[in-house]
Length: 476
Image (cartoon, rainbow, N blue to C red; front, side, top):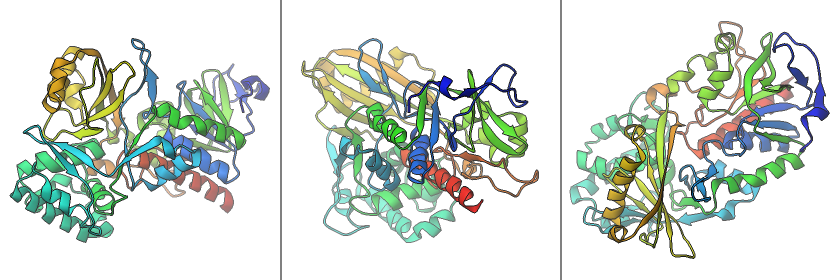
């Protein structure tokens, strides 16, 4: 529904918003703040349950931090960073199926790894059943010594035997502490464990919570052929979300782009809506699908004190990601993607080869704290050094364009300490002030999903928040 704001406006003064700000009676059941994956997933689940959400997104595009932009210099549509998924991302795949974009994902059973000698190793599932399906490719990896392989096999067997219950018992430990216990040497950490964990969790192994490191292997690599398969979108991220707007509108909902919530409004102990720069939006339930720092910015001390879920948001922290778009005048990369162990750049993705022969490569550096203050020339120098190590042809090619994209607030820091502060979707009726704020629901990959900061975690959080809203309405 693309009706103008004016068709919903009724001016009325209210003590919970500034004088002169009109109330917009949108006649909506639920207000969703944020048009990222969490907000979109929640909105579609609510529509399936018969609700009519209104989605407010501050930007002029959907997707949140997993989005695209138009580069001013080249005019190309670029993703802020390459996002990938695995077959184990069941809820994300459910969401993609719901909006009809599953066919826009390219799937790879094999991942290609760079060796120090410039050669390639392939990690591919074999004919053995899980959890042994990766044993053959691990045995053939020349990147690892015989001792390295024995250490990896021993650790993976321990992971498999731990199971989910054993994983959850590791809530206070880091992944590195487990590797210490399992006698994993420095070399195998740098060449094998670190590339996988940093790419999946956006945090180094000595910081990341053990439960997340274990999950990457238990639910992904060890679970089966399909679960370990990697998916890469074949279209710009923005294109993946476009169908969601139509589905929300067809279901009686509404999407408002370029509309930022500036303040959460409460009445007594209940969330009643949000203020925007122009209007006040009222709804029966408010679902915040904002990043934690943006939610923290629209609540006041009163709201923070009232709701235990909002007390320690800053404790979640941030871990940055750097994506670097490289355009060469000719093709230099032959692999669809490449893992670069023990190098500054973690992944390279072969994005496209143009009709004029130019090639677009995307370099990704996760947990990129040390890169955030670097200028473009130094970033370019470091990245090209690793590209040339993998593809010597890059030394003979001309770099037509280099476009670094810094995401300083890319994810929360998935440490053991952060797990203590990740909030649940629904308010609890019990607390020092009589319980949390009624009618306020939370979603986002930083919420308590059991997953690290991933697209899968974002969708799971949205589904959980939608289910909580429906359940609360049913109980009333």
